[in-house]
Image 1 (cartoon, rainbow, N blue to C red):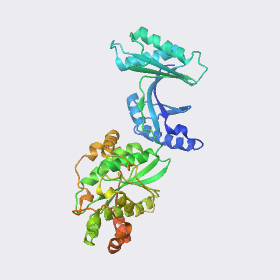
Image 2: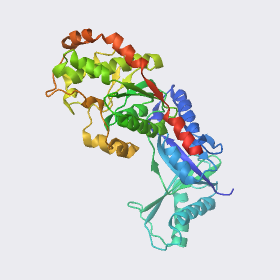
Image 3: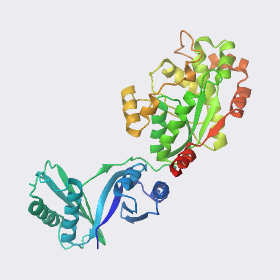
Image 4: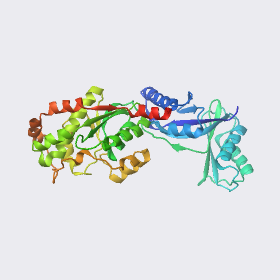
Length: 400
């Protein structure tokens, strides 16, 4: 067998699922096929126990990068698939080292970790590791260090072949997108809400997105940011849709109706009511927000409770216990941070009172909401909503 580049994909918590594991795996395979099919010849995927093996005509680096964007895999391991013999495993290890380090003769401490998923192999795991290690010592002149190696060579023996790797990368982990249902994520232009949407995806939720803009009193900058954020998040699920709702006139209606100190909480309740109505049309089962307890005045426990009562759908807050530094670090990791930092005109900054109420109740806002005619206001907002499809735009740009 000629050594063949491939990628090994290993489950995280999905491996712990019992009778429902098959359903989770079907979602995972569909998501993987979507990522691999984008602009490439069909890839081949097959199962080896709790490991998926992927081969493709794509360069191994690109295949690895694509696989790392599929939520549900905890480890993404570029490898060489070789014949099921000790010498073939050693040859593959040397090929990988040559590809990674070239002819650089700098000695590097290394270790070989061997594992036999198939016990019919003639050598034990320790004997196989020693065999491969001896070849590396002889041909590269590297010293063995089993405790603190600079390079770790992993050899995995399977039913028909041996997989050899010198690189083990972290996957997204979590549950496959779509395996837990559908949600509607409220998306602003800041750091918090895109991270919250991503964390919801990691728990198996497929997300649609809604963005509230201050139009006609603000420009389109916040919509541009929301659009860019959805394009970035679309890497993890595909076929994303962004619903843009202009809410400026409704905010002014709340203010002229005497909202005063409860203006922020009142407009947040309006957003939640509108999002709930939209979610029901989309058959989404929950709403997702980027709230973090105590981060701003509208996110006190009292205000969060008041806002939550505006929806009969579950209101999920994946970041409720995160601090700002944790959120920003995660935003930078998933690629939304550089977009969120861009300036925009946030609708929440419109008509902000000098003092914001930190303790509110639904009863306190009932009169205000009655005066503005909340049900009719929600319908009017949805009638003016615009649907954008960032994923289709991304494919058009790629094709051109």
